[in-house]
Length: 363
Image 1: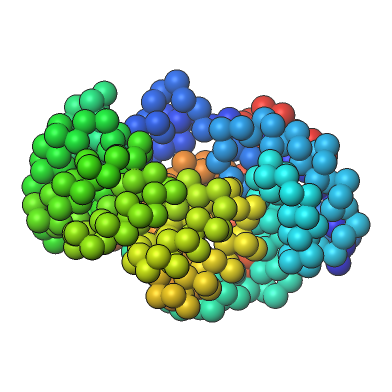
Image 2: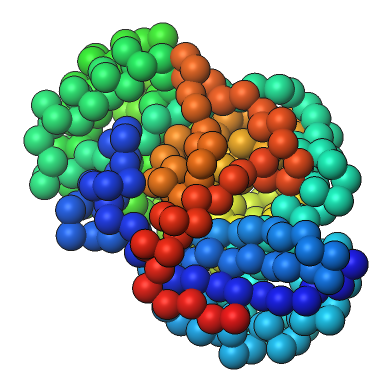
């Protein structure tokens, strides 16, 4: 089975139209569309695999797929994911790897179809459902009562886990907002806190202690800049707060450095930064060897397969922004997602929606 054709689209989804559960501050902004790369690989046997990724630079990435990646990959074996990834990685060009991410996901979709199995079964079949956490943002531009209302509504919908994203600009006011949110959600709800703009160590330490002693937070995400290994080491020695990090990691070496320093943490890798699922799966395995859980920062339609397939991926974030692209969108039941049953990603694209939302297309 060889790659016969590659097409890619730049999709622009209106934020308001694509959301049925509130997410972060950026996705709530009416004037901030959701820029998405959608890629399809067609084989000489007629099989079609799809891949997608949200990316602010979608225009550039789609152009790269048409100009640089498709000529390299057409005619190659469609199911040789390691060979295809190595071919692109060997260029040493990070932008090409970013553009390849959607294609790598499409290759894995083809893998599942060829095996007549959903990806989560191919990857191990660890569980048939997974807990999902609700995302909410806290910032001066959002009334605290609005955040409280959204979190409470999520809990009424069945969520038992909430991840709160704070700006990282004013620890004192953000602490007060977190107290109000924690009081509103209740102590029985899993509660994580992420910082969009990481603190300096002198601020991160008292915040970590506050989250542990006053909030009972289940993790503190991106508390410090990614390369502050010594700062993270001190946090683990001086506080009991669990740590999470990795959304902004650019290289796997950043992950290795934290493991080598003996820092316990939850890894939050973004496949867009590493070039897709092929490298991500290796680092999930490496994390398992070193007893580190992994919660990928990616579309729920993809992360549900990782969580149901792999034992050290315990939960996923709920991100419904791409639901309008599918005839069979994911459906939540009491804050959990069931593993998809159809082969590959198990998704049926809505081509009418794709045509309507296409800004540019190559291939």
